[in-house]
Image (cartoon, rainbow, N blue to C red; front, side, top):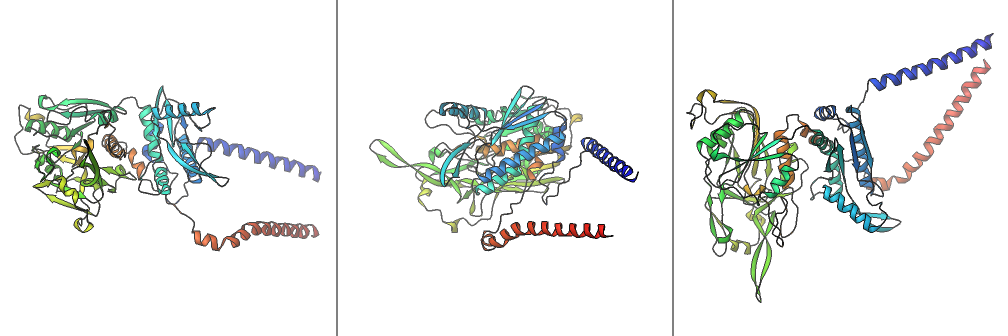
Amino acid sequence: MRMENYKIGIWLKLLLGVMVVILLLQLTSKYRVRIDMTEEKRYTITDATKEVLSQVKDDLYIEVYLEGELPSNFLRFQTAIRETLEEFEVYTDASLEYRFIDPSQAESQRARNQYYQGLMQQGLQPSNLNLKKDGKQSQIMVFPGLIILAGGQELAVNLLKGSRASSIEDVLNQSIEGLEYEIANGIALVTGNTRKRVGLVYGHDEPDTTELAGFTNLVLSKYDLFRINLPARTTPLTGYDLIVVTKPAKAFTEVEKYLLDQYLIGGGRLLFFLDALGVDMNEASGEGTVAIPYENNLTDMLFKYGVRINNNYVADINCGNTPVVAGNIGDQPQINMLPWPYFPIITNYGNHPVVKNMDALQVRFASEIDSVKADGIKKTPLLFTSANSKVIGAPVRVSYNDLKDELLPEKFVHKPVPIAYLLEGEFQSLYKNRFVPGNFDQSAFRPDGLESKMAVIADGDLIRNEFDLESGNPLPLGVDPYSREHYANETLIMNLMEYLMDDSGLIQARSKEIKIRPLDKARVKQERTKWQLVNIAAPIFLLILFGFAKMYVRKTRYRK
């Protein structure tokens, strides 16, 4: 009887254990508990991203083109992408499927090249990597990005982002920090029911449509773009999520300023690309020419909002090049590329998600921006020149003859100069305690504003594209026609537009920081043998110790 009761007890315990396990599985499937034990909370998804994922109704299918034989650092990048997608699966009620694809696994070289061309036409950018295998170096092409498909729409998202001035390890780490934002933003764009509306102001001798072709193509890739003839406008500016002002050369009237002012006060978003001075480079040979101030009549409005663009130019020893005719060989002019300090290369950024981990960008004939008092407005500088810069006050003489002089660091000793500001808060109208201009209804005037945002960049050329030297076609924003260098001008503009129009705070995901904790190579070499012995001998010793302990317990138990 005792033996039978003993067996029944064992079966009851087993049955109880199985029931407890089943109950726990049911509870964990219904109530998901996730604890991020990392110091920097690398696996914690922001509330804004969770909100985006919770609103997804269509099934998501994601193709990640980072598979196959990869260097160890890119394998880490691949793992981070997989972990991010796994986290996204938890917070979306729709189906999210993903797979990793090796684009090099084509049957022939021709098929592989066609596949590569197709991926590039979709918007994925390739990268060439050096791979060491069996003691031999080889080069492979990878596409560190993904394509999101949902509801009949698809979008290519490049995931390799960061400053080219950094090492490849830092670039990969910066890219890992931005994974949540890049993928979540792509999902939001693909699954969004409506596209944001961007208005582009014209009527003040702004750059023509060919000079803004790069900007137009960039905006239309994600938003709807509308041209606003502001001088002919007689009704309030409504129905736009963002209005952009691009390098005006003629003055705004008080009526036009009133329209922009009331649009901002009513919660609208503004983005200014302004030049303080204008210079004709066709007259820069010989003794040169003088930069003349633009009378755009926006100074008082910007001052009221919290910034002032000074009538000067910033010059930087960290700069791009400009072509100069150095002589002739026969009938052909000899052109040299010389450093031009009026074309600063910006790598010094403020502390804000818009410019976090951003690559270098180029500005041309930019001016200094001062911050002035504006109650209730938070002012964040975004772009700075380097520590080797200087400010040249008006009148500024611009001459190609200056290129003959060597750029000496002792002549560029000014501290970093801000050339872009982000302003956020409840703005006060420029026309508060003043008569309303034009024939607008005084009763509809708003002296104080709703919470809003605006950005001011003291370089009108930042938004203007260059042209291909052979075909004459417009180039993408930030592409230098001579060196073919691709600067981050597109990235800055898109980040700014997304931040200004986004009220969900999704871009805050770009604030995530992941620390690199590399091993001390000297210590690894010195203590290698010790840790090898510990890792091999310690488990064996513990196993033997456990065996003797268990045997001793059994002998003691049965002896009694």
